[in-house]
Image (tube, rainbow, N blue to C red; front, side, top):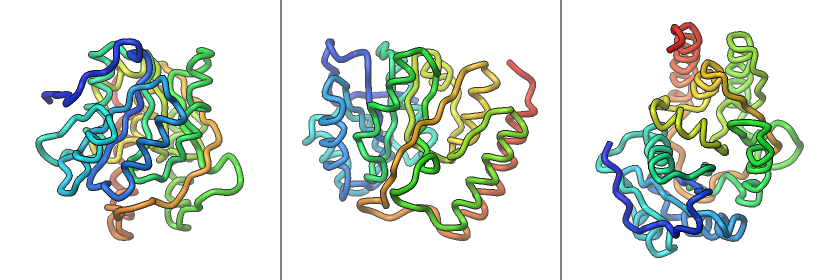
Length: 244
């Protein structure tokens, strides 16, 4: 995939980057970027615009973020991989991901960085199930998360509580791994398996999450059921593949 930046990162900030995948997130994106800048003023901010049909790209530019405009709609996994490829090629040592819909409070980002800086993990994810409070997903989604967490634990030995969390941070080893290959569709559970297969370390930290602050989710109830079946099979196949 060809990557094109619409602005250039500041040389003094080429160590940490916050990636924001966005598809038609004009309603929430400006507030998300401002929150990230307040929480991590030393970091660069990159918006991966997944071929939005609204003002997502314009708002990213107006807010001073770096911008990758994807030429077609590729989905969340490929958009995140594009951001990781950008981070890898530009030599960033740490890359964080938060979504463009406002579900991930920016003040949580610093807690994701701490285990990376202590070399206690290669990937850190925020879990909404490690503390009380915050937005609670529907019972069906909670059941799906429990099922995926159980499957991942049985197949890999990795204990997770929130396998679908998109709030995450990556060190250089993880950036390099996922810049090369990253699950393309709904990637988070498969990425955990890939991480374990590569011998890298995962840690979860508590994170309160909110309801989306604008736009609409692309996952309906029927699609969620299809997603659960598809991801469950994909996780199994990933775990059984021969190690590279």
